[in-house]
Length: 308
Ligand SMILES: [Zn+2]
Image (cartoon, rainbow, N blue to C red; front, side, top):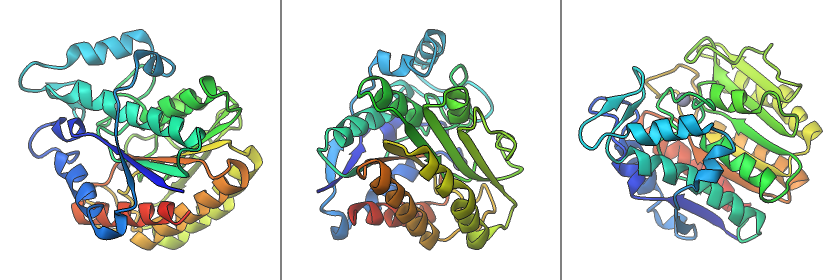
């Protein structure tokens, strides 16, 4: 069986501006790492553009039309202080969401064991009605609702180990007990949500971690809080919001993880997927802003997916 790699050149063309941390160089670094012969077995797939109906399962029409209608013909338009559109941003955002949709379809159809979506812009801060934090559409949530409504899966989990809390995914899921969201994140930190007391309808598990928490606190939180909750939820599909900005080299946060932590957590999430979801797992790139740490950490994550 195989691991699929979804990406598209349009995701390199989305340009939030010089000096913006969410740069095209991030995706170039990940793809360069995956050029190594050890990743030759990855089955490379072109990410399609998400269909409007896929976006509309998470985002209201006004948000979708607002984003796509704001894309500038030249230059940049800032939606907020962090979130900036360039001429290529509309296609990039549609390809990023479409990658997760296509990966969900392929994994549910048993065309592959699992998949990694090497895309940008990221998605987990995008709330149903609001783009923010470099994110335009919520790629992971769009994939989850595709799985539930098109493929009829009864329960879908998103696990998010990006160093920031995925406020957008939580907002999309928190009232719906067929969906599950768990996050480890530095706290307090942008976007300010993700306290342990935020539990949705019992389907949200937040594990806030102090700055400098490091591997031991991260692994303890995953082991004690997230894995048991996943076992109780019994997801039929696991989606991973794979941000690598909790790495010790990352300039935006101080959680102090290492590549080995990404190997470890990926193994644990695959075990859950094997136990409840016939191994079905789709990961999508979120943050990660130190280029070499991002590339090495994504490679460590994908190496485990390929060993499934
Ligand atoms: Zn992040």
